[in-house]
Figure 1 (cartoon, helix red, strand yellow):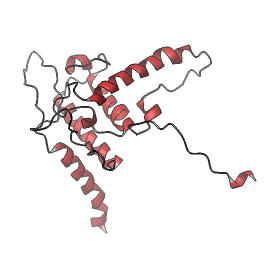
Figure 2 (figure 1 turned 90 degrees about the horizontal axis):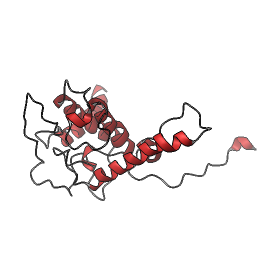
Figure 3 (figure 1 turned 90 degrees about the vertical axis):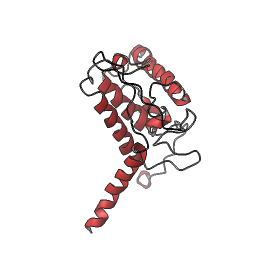
Figure 4 (figure 1 turned 45 degrees about the vertical axis):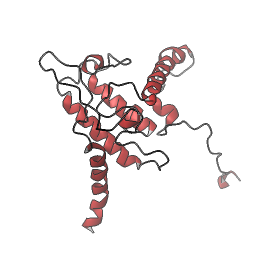
Length: 200
């Protein structure tokens, strides 16, 4: 019976390895500090901006298991966190290259935002928006769209919601999850509730 208990753990490890073992480096290109100048990691040989990265389902395939995808993405984020160890509290705009929004957010919080709000919120892996190993590149359409969506979210939270005078003070801020709820494309309908037998 103990063997059966290990099957989910082995599956999760295999998913993580399939997303992380294809690259010698999973870390984004941090800004060089005065003490160390390291070259930017390159993409996997043959990987282009139009090809999905590790953790991205092939076109036309079923969506990956969300638990496995979450584990794989978490492993990538943990790998990046190790590369910026000691700089997690510095502004993301000084730790990473080509940060155009949320520049002042601490780098550790910035990565958590990418993982939870963007990755889990849209049910995607890092490779949906980034060329793995070239995180500062802007070649992926999804990354450019994500920036515009973040600008929209910031506007809704800072301007529009602030103008609604009768809104409760403790309202929840809008995030990617508000509309996407784990899907790359928000739903435009919802199920009609089934009639209740208790209402009779």
